[in-house]
Length: 230
Image 1 (cartoon, rainbow, N blue to C red):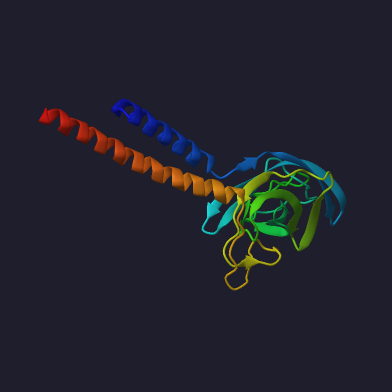
Image 2 (image 1 turned 180 degrees about the horizontal axis):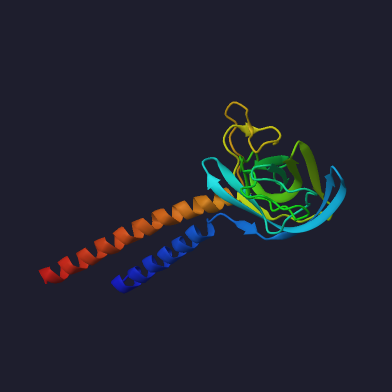
């Protein structure tokens, strides 16, 4: 095979390796979903619709989840002073995993006027996968505690997921999820699937790419040496 043909072949292998590495990138889908809340308050039932956004950022063997409300929900007949309202919520898991993840956040940093929609600060929590595959994250129950009372807001419109992540179970994770963390089962290995094969292909591709670059350098030096001897 001529020098030109070998160089072209190595370039093709490098391009294939690059494609394999690109395919190995983790999949994540996010969308803002309107959630129709029905809130049981101390003075009766109130309703509100708020767009909900959920984000997941890899953190160690799990993910840090952030749940955001774009509009206020419920209201109070009296002013809520600074720090008087404490929110928390649950996120329902679906797909390859099940259960709920608890998220919470800081109290209100400014007074909330009476009869004004209550703006919920971003709530955060930690999710550790106990199964491998695509997992969905959907807004569930919102709880608001203020002035010694508790208001519970439940979605009534069966909202779709705000986030979908392609995850791999942490080693030793098993059991149901209630707070976003699994239970150590004594070294259970994570499940494997198509995504693991893709990652393996990406690793192999990267190895071939390095080998190809070394081969090209060797062929170039060999060709230069041969010309010098002539």
